[in-house]
Image (cartoon, rainbow, N blue to C red; front, top):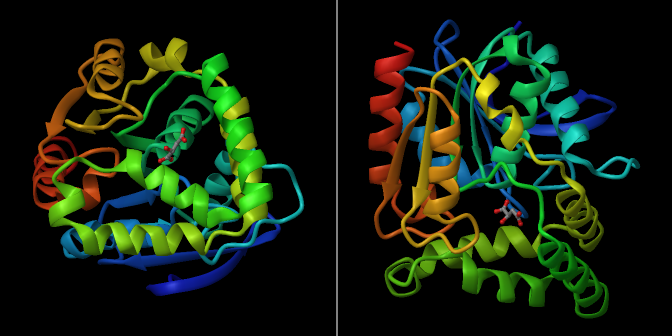
Length: 273
Ligand code: MLT
């Protein structure tokens, strides 16, 4: 029996996962996967915009939001196991996946490992590339700083890179909300996730295998996974659609939700409904 609602706790893959499940019972399913170090709350706007015609699920990735971290080291592979376990627990055979940044890394690995469980991908502000040696070094510097100075300084340093210029003036409330989510992530989980991200494998060489409809969205001022990175995936994924979101940086769904949702609904109408 389905149990729709907000902030539901369920045991899956031996940890407690917190998720929100809204929309009609028999509607097509979309699962939203947040970036690092955020939570399912970053999808509130999309959940509200799509819950009439879709069954929309957003969950907290292990160690984020209200989900447990468990005792294992984190890895993208473990996050994929968690996703598949959640789908099995909720008896979802097939779904569309919408992942932003780290959520996109998880979505790309998930479709590579389990191609028949997904019927569309929405890849937002993400990349198929592994960390460069410099990016790995920066993660290690960040870990040292977090262990010494805590998550708040890491959050404040990271926030400078997450948003478009205009957002710092017009979206101060959004920035404050994102900061709140970031500083509520435990030091241990932030460090474990940084290690997982630094060790993640590339998925660029697997993109040609993707056979489902793919929408690629990217903020025009995304400094972390810029439009060229999105363009690279767009070229490699047969039949993919790509759109650039104006007045948005790395968190395009939060910075320009109207334009983000417009592209998403157009894609879903064409491909799914
Ligand atoms: C994210 O938003 O998930 C992060 O920017 C991903 C990363 O640090 O690679």
